[in-house]
Amino acid sequence: MRQHLTGKAKVAVSHLSRAYEQELEELLCEGMESGELDPGIDVRMATFALIGMCNSVSFWARREPGISLDRVAMGFAHTLIQGLRAR
Image (cartoon, rainbow, N blue to C red):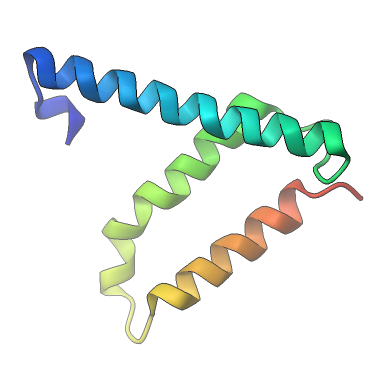
């Protein structure tokens, strides 16, 4: 986990994390500009929500009986698309 890193490793991971966040923000902005995503989305909040969803899987998925990676992926995709798409 990031909080256990020190020195150069911590700096490197922080830079990568920020670059990842920026890429997601850009994708969301492109979707809003194209009309595919709701123009009222709070891009920063949506970015953190998406990252949080993905990061949390490792904590709960293994405790769920019969859950598969495909089921998680489809559930997340549906939730995100329905929540972010333009109406």
